[in-house]
Length: 80
Image 1 (cartoon, rainbow, N blue to C red):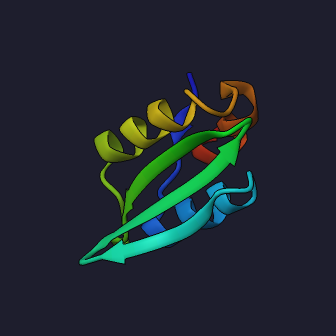
Image 2: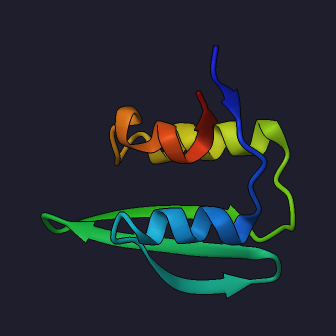
């Protein structure tokens, strides 16, 4: 079973930017990313912490998989 990688908020933001998300705001320790596809806003909020908890990372993965296929996201979030 694949295991979640240890990632920071900055790492996750860079991963999502590679899928054409852009930072639209930062409030406190949270970064809001958005991309628009076919006039539909796709928004994700990422905590900008040095190391994200496993549960938080799993929740981000689940949210992002609404917009990006799991097979594309898996290599960024999980070890083989």
